[in-house]
Length: 211
Image 1 (cartoon, helix red, strand yellow):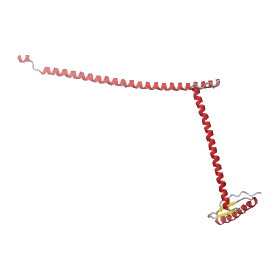
Image 2 (spheres, rainbow, N blue to C red; image 1 turned 90 degrees about the vertical axis):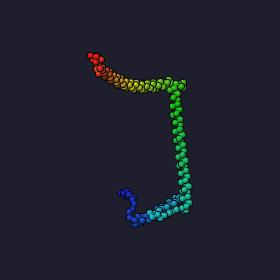
Image 3 (tube, one colour; image 1 turned 180 degrees about the horizontal axis):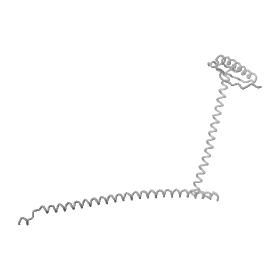
Image 4 (cartoon, rainbow, N blue to C red; image 1 turned 30 degrees about the vertical axis):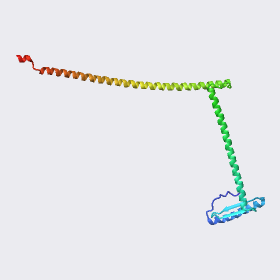
């Protein structure tokens, strides 16, 4: 029966953690040395402890040479990746430009067809499809035009009713005002007649004096 899978996690006890670090570090250095000798490989090993202490191992070549070689390789790898990325970006832009140009050409060609231009290159089926598209567009245009005309007529009718109502109100006010003026005129006329009669009665009569 095989051993169960051991879960790796941090060792909480500091002493046990330090002992395990020393043992595992030694085993790691031993494995690095073995692969260097057995496979004739250049190996560089750098380990920092929890307290920041450095432990390193390198094969026959010195650590500086291996690190310098690593830096050169990393730089070349990064440049290659960057160039590949730029190439992919340029390819994407070229593809996008081709798609957009084809789309623009199609739109321009369709616009000319809708205007009745460059029809010689179209087949009978293409002309029939174009005719159907134009008929559908004309139906939509007429429908929208009729809707706008109906809305405009309704708005004008509302304005007409409002103007008629306003005229009726003004006519009514004018009649009421004329009636008031007429009543005032009759009242003034009656007042004048009463004043004249009163003055006549108050004058002395000569015939009475002669008698």
